[in-house]
Amino acid sequence: MAQDFILAGVMGWPIAQSRSPILHNYWIEKYKLNGRYVPLAVKPENLGDAIRGLRALGFRGCNLTMPHKQMAMTMVDRVTDTAKRVGAVNCIVVEPDGKMWGTNNDGNGWYLSLLEVAPSWKPSNGPVAILGAGGAARGLLVTLIENGAKEIRLINRTFEKAEKLAKDIDPSIVKPIAWDKRADVIGDVALLTNTTDQGFIGKPALDISLDRLPKQALVSDLIYTPPETAFLAAARARGNVTVNGLGMLLHQARPAFEAWFGVMPEITPDLRAAIMATFK
Image 1 (cartoon, rainbow, N blue to C red):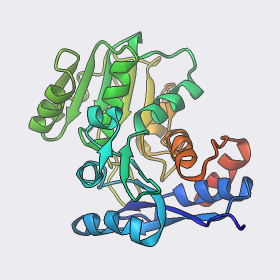
Image 2 (cartoon, rainbow, N blue to C red):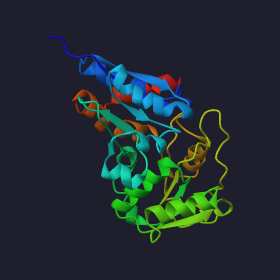
Image 3 (cartoon, helix red, strand yellow):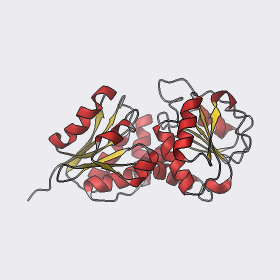
Image 4 (spheres, one colour):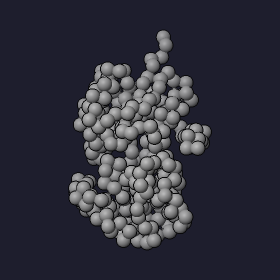
């Protein structure tokens, strides 16, 4: 009997910038599977209809990207403990009986991408500063705390949002910081991470002075389109080790692919080259 055709995809608004289809379809072809992974442009007001439609259209599941990760959590039958702690999902799996569950692989994917570049780095090395307080930041906060972070400075344009997120996650570790203090509170950090969309293609560059940032601090940006934001370029130019969002994309994708297609895929140089070729 022919192998069932498996459909999966990624929902976002916008979605054309996502490299997830290239990544998953590369693996589908590599492992000779019968399926396809497609981009799904879904406006926020249509998210409920789109998620319910996964069952009707025969999808095995989907990823969620901006701006859907938090809202999607309320639209599935159950969520994993990790997703509950994060308060957002980035992956939905449709079971054979039609029930849907959600999880969040973002934080662990990001953490693995840091260790890939800086194997000796630990969240307990020193204070961490995170720019932004949205769904992506939530995943990072949970992962950092689970891996030993003692102090996290959460810097956001809307202070009240950072304050609420700090209270939700762990106010003894996560300290909200006003946006106008962003350049003043990075003088002793071991990690500085951008989780905002500033620097993303079509968006203004992230506005932050790195003059006080220690040269030994690790600097990461969850953005990978473009592969190097102005923020990362400035950090690299002054000697900091930098990590873009591509590694996070790759590492968070592996458990999702396994849940849908039944194979735990490998991250190889050829795969990275295939994705990087799309930026040229």
